[in-house]
Length: 97
Image 1 (cartoon, helix red, strand yellow):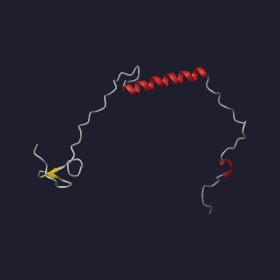
Image 2 (image 1 turned 90 degrees about the vertical axis):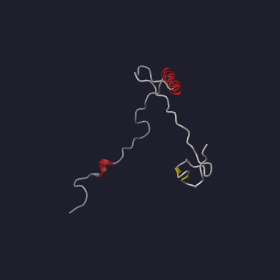
Image 3 (image 1 turned 180 degrees about the vertical axis):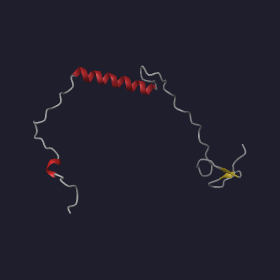
Image 4 (image 1 turned 180 degrees about the horizontal axis):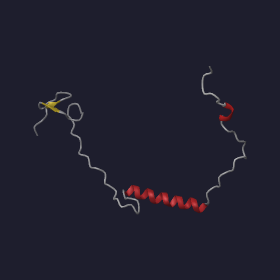
């Protein structure tokens, strides 16, 4: 019994090859279309840099969340994890101030 799919025709499933000039070329965008796209892209970029929502969108752009600065150990410089009044990584005693 033959392996694989019965009746599989490899000749029908080859990649199609087209000689140059046989495929229709897409028309280049006009200068007006390019300028319109450029203006829209500049507006979008300025809006994104300012953090505003798109026009017509009912949502307001959320401000970035403010993160509290990480407290670091003076001995090892890693983020501070306290254990029994000392740094959990290097064991340096923590000051009480």
